Structures are given as structure tokens and as C-alpha cells.
Amino acid sequence: GFTVFNLVEIALVVVLARRYLPALNVNSVEGVARFFGISLVASMVSAFGVGLVGQALPGNQGQDIFLRWWSSHSMGMALIGVFGLSLSRHSVGNLLRPLRLLEGVALIGLILGGCYAIFGQLQIPYSFLLMPLIVLMAVRFRVVGTAFSLIVVSIVAMAGTMMGLGPYRLFPPEVAPLVV
Image 1 (cartoon, one colour):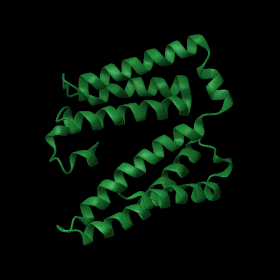
Image 2: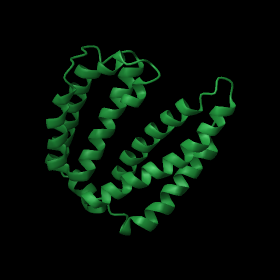
Image 3: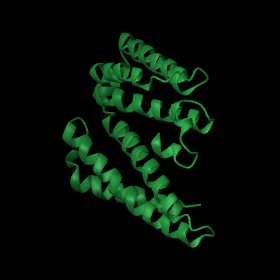
């Protein structure tokens, strides 16, 4: 469908990251903030193109398409990009130590259990309960753990919402993915 816009977006992220993110370092608040900004700008450019195409389609849905594309791509690119850039020889070596690996698997298991309870069949309306687990991932596994846990939560929240489960199911179907 919109492969050209995806390629433009990826190319723009690479160019902007090389220019505005010295050494591609996201292991600081400034580095993460810069990469988030880069993701927002690059996805906005591609979303504008997709929105123009959508405006020309029957139904004139350009604005809705723009918002969906921009929100999903900017957050996806930011989270996956930060995760990828934070993987270094040191962080991977740290993650592969047996006790550390066990701790990481246990924490991800707890996060997945919380996601199931909130965004799955149980539909417990307390999504804030995931925050202590995400903070624990941040403290124990730094940027890699934080980015990975946010990716997991985002995927499960989106899947649950699309299946009509979880707290975001209460929003109109065209807005629910934006809220996630």
C-alpha cells in the first residue's frame, strides 16, 4: 500500500538521527528526547503524504488517515528505534548473564500478566498498575528494559483494544487506536 511513504519515513529518521543524535546515543534523557523528536518529525512528513492520498480517495478521510499514521508510526518508530539503538555489546552481555536473564524474563512475565488482566479477558480497569513494573524494568535494565517493556505493553494494549477488550474499548473504534 504505502511502501513509498514507509521508505521516506525510514530514510528521514536515519538522516535526522545521524545529524541531530551524536553517536546515535539514546542512553540519556537528552538522547531519548532527541530521538523521540526525530521520530515525530519523520512520521509527520510521511503521514502528510499518506493524508494527501487519503484526501483524494472516496470519503475524504485524509485527516483521519494522517492522525492514525502519525500517532502509530511516531510511537512505534520511537520505541523500536530507542530499543534498537540501546542494544550495545555491553547491554546485551549484561542481559545474557543467567540471573539477570531470569530476572528480565520474570519481569516481562509480570508485565504480560498485568497486560492480560488489564487489556485482556479480565478487563481490570487499573492500567496504572503497570507503572511500578515498568519503573522496575527501567531501574534494573535501563533504556533497553524500558523500551522493551513499553513495546510489549503497546502491542498488548493495541491487540486488546482491536478485539474490543480493555479500557480503551470504550472509545469510538476510529479513535481507540489513537488513545492507545
